[in-house]
Image (spheres, rainbow, N blue to C red):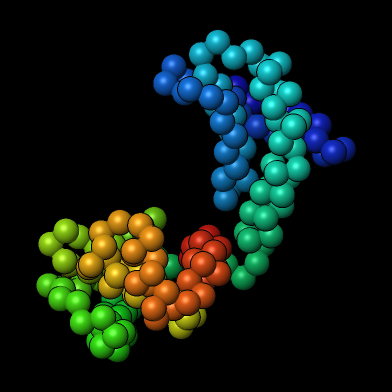
Amino acid sequence: MSEKINLHNRLVSYTTRRSKRAKRLRLAVYCDGNFIVTLPKGIKKSSAQNYIVNKSQWILNKLDFFKKISTSKAFKLTPDDYLKHKDKALRLVTKRIKHFNKQYGFRYKKITIRNQKTRWSSCSKKKNLNFNFKIAFLPEKLRDYIIVHELCHLRELNHSQKFWNLVAKVIPEYLEINKEVKIFSLKI
C-alpha cells in the first residue's frame, strides 16, 4: 500500500508490505527512488511510522544519494554492446589476471566474459573466473580491484579475514575502492 509521510518538511512516498516471514521491521531505499517498509506480523502501522521518523535522516540521505547518482553522467549498455565489447573485455581481463597472478601464483581453469545484470564477477568452485563485459568500461583501479578480488577467491572462496588479507597484499586501499565499485554499479 502506498503512503506518504512528512520527514523534515519533506513529503516522502513509501510503500508498506506485510510479511509473515519478517522477524523485524525493515526499511529499504532503492536506487530507483522506491522506499519500502516491510512489516512483520503483529506490528502496527503506527509503530512503523514512529520507526520511519526515528530513521528519517538515514532515509533522506539515501533518497538524496540515489537521486544524485541518477542525475549524474550515467550511461546504460545494451545487449548489442555486449557483442561489440566482450572480446575487448576478455583481452583486458586476461592481461590483468596474468599481471596480478605473478604475485599470487594461483591456478584457474578458464576466464569467461558474460553479460550479467547484477554482478561484476564471480569465481566458481571449479576455479573458473567469470567477469561482466562492463568491466571494460570501469576506471582502471576499480577494474583491477575486481580482478584481484576474484583471483583471491581461488584460494579463499569466502570473505574471511584471510581473503581480505590476500586482497590487501596487492590492493591495500581495497575498502575505499570497494565503496567506489558499489557507487559505479549504479551508473552502468
